[in-house]
Image (cartoon, rainbow, N blue to C red; front, side, top):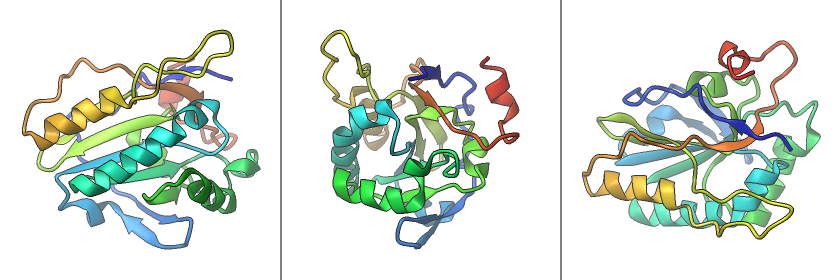
Length: 199
């Protein structure tokens, strides 16, 4: 179980990188589809990562809460499905049903969207505010899966606080903890330069 920090991050204030991806039903979503939302959360996740499994119930709750509050929420899987068949689109559809994900779960087959976001691990979270660009990139909260001791409760505290600030027209603090998780499973030879900088 790798513990890769997301340290080479997209710059605060950056616009949403353009994307056009299909979800597990074949429906296509584009970045412009979310332009009118007051905020957009983009989560890079996958099916098999123990860090994502650890937070999957909170992901489902957070997605539902965002929907109620008018915040757009989507997840993207950029893992190489040939090397990791558990992260294939058909398995994504099963995972979305079992986890109770009500948000779009998109597949980044050529990994270009992960590169555009400078995503490096699963999970990795990005929050964009309308008219302000990226205001938060980092962890969901301090909880991590553990083997030897009880894990901290999964609350979504950090990301939820950032969303609350956006909806209340408050500034999101720039001191943000990077996410921690398994490295994105890049296709051989497709690893971006910023990943090499982490090694």
